[in-house]
Length: 224
Image (cartoon, one colour):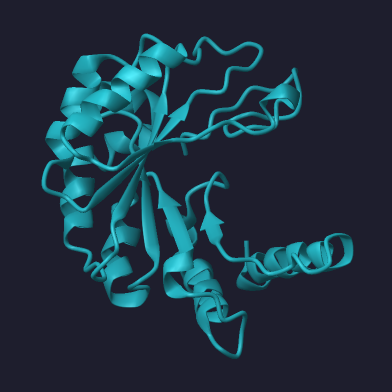
């Protein structure tokens, strides 16, 4: 997408809200997520952020913008110099290389340990942290061992974990974990005092939740 297309999406949403929900048109947060790898499109995303942040643009606060990445190291290396202050979210999904390779093919080129080392070099504001997105998949990455390994690799980092139960869809061999297993996974993270949120699904009843397409004839998972 071009910069104008990215900003155009924001303006279109604002116009829709102004027309259909008068008084609620103010947009407080912008998230680049679930649309491919934003850092592959670095220049356009960077320029869009500059417009969003500018008082002559949309005047969104710097910590109200989040960009998600699967771990594209060339883009992460540019991040520190060119878009400091904007929030970063990493699609992590597994602390084990072989599992992450299955979910995120780019991990084979940019291994997790190198990605984390690069992220560690990004300067953070005083109250800022890195969000680590973690899709929980039944009997794949939801065990206590997975949780303990996740704690191990994030220990000492200014980290926030967003747990996302997998949204099942027709034809997928992945399934969502039981609620009890999700809670036990979080308990391990809580024990080590890593801030963690379990994200609730919206739209899964019509195959429109995170990682789903609104068609029983198509299969997709947002693993970038």
